[in-house]
Image 1 (cartoon, helix red, strand yellow):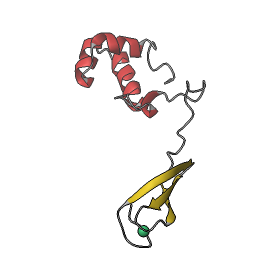
Image 2: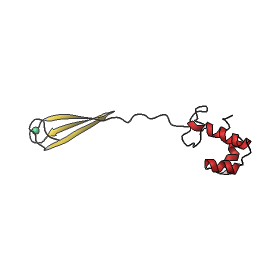
Image 3: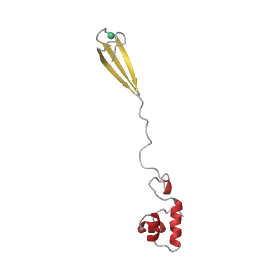
Image 4: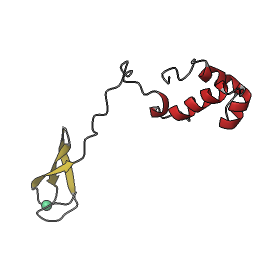
Length: 115
Ligand SMILES: [Zn+2]
């Protein structure tokens, strides 16, 4: 801290007050004896979204869910292929997933919100 009166660096912080969003420091110059105050403002961390489990009905499903690799369209196409006589394995190789995964989609174990 540099003294505002005599530009000496020989100063001491005598008191520090913390407020939300700013810090006030009371400084005394040891050379000329003057006192001054500095104010440091800083950005407060913004309060994030409320934590906790998402409420029922507010849960992302299907393609709106970030971790999903398929869209509703894919699911409908998979079930269509199965109805056309394709095996789980054949459909799985088309979409790059296992036959057991296809069977769960076709049998509405997964993606049961897609008609
Ligand atoms: Zn001074």
